[in-house]
Amino acid sequence: MIYLDCAATTLQKPPAVVRAAAWAVGRLATPGRGGHPAAAQAAALAFRCREEAAALFGVADPERVIFTANATHALNIAIRSLVPPGGRVVLSGWEHNAVTRPLAALDAKVRIAATPLFRPQAALDAFRAAVEPGVDAVICTHVSNVFGYTLPVADIAALCRQRGVPLIVDAAQSAGCLPLDLDGWGAAFIAMPGHKGLYGPQGTGLLLCGRQVRTAPLLYGGTGSASASPEMPPFLPDRLEAGTHNMPGIAGLLQGLRFVRCMGTGRILAHERRLTAQAAGGLKRLSRVRVFSGPAQTGVLSFQIAGVDCEEAAARLGQMGIAVRAGLHCAPMAHESGGTFEEGTVRASFSAFNTQGEAARLVRCVARLTGR
Ligand code: PMP
Image (cartoon, rainbow, N blue to C red):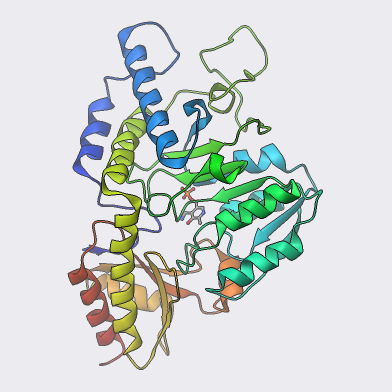
């Protein structure tokens, strides 16, 4: 199988990730629970993972790196921390259900800084018009998981700083291929999965917390610290990490983060861009294929085939040995903004492990589907 669904989760992992996760099972206990070597070793490894993430993502204090189960979990904590029921929020037009559904549950008043696809300058202008003092939070996806479109997050962060509005960045599609700088941007939170561009196991995610940011636990329970208190500890990371940690996941994630640091996000991005441009170029030459491509696109490529339903196209590509995803990709808002809500798209998404040969095969298989 040629796996081109890396925007859902990366399947090919560095061997060190797999080894570390398997090694941790049956060896590591839980950080903060007991003074015995298995707990101490778990605490040391968890701290190394926080340090690695802090160094990669511009966080001065590793304690502000929180382990979560996925990006959704991280985003829910960030949103609950900043947005009260009925609160006011400004979003980009490209958000995932992991942002919009928690806001709907809070009955938040949402304003969308709407702009066309692949127009970062217009996006910045739209945020300028929409972000007013008194807004509870701005939430912006860094890269659309549907179109690979990169939003100008550093500029949006500067705007939010000027206006005194906290910013939550959904880095689910950018962590591992674009630079992230929590403290440099002055963002309130950055949320990301560990299992996509950081090449960690599923069941891992990270929430980076800004300096002095208000935090509200989503889960309440044991932390191994301040156990006599009925309340969650006020300090990070314990305040946001109730319950036993996913140590196999964290051990694997540490190796994934090291892989990304050693490769360099710039090199990973360049590789993914090369594959995206190659596939986009090939698909554009097919007469019935509509390709969504533009400047500063990452390794995510959406397309449609005239006369072939996108689910049908993905199923037939699957029969030819290519794994892609079809439909709305958990991001109906992005499809509304992109004008593809009715039909959805077929999405091919690349990682550091995909090859030019695989991108070429995708184009050949789509050509067969279109009858060429
Ligand atoms: N936001 C975006 C932009 C995503 O692409 C995804 C996952 N595809 C998520 C949030 C949710 O991530 P997770 O599945 O790790 O909860």
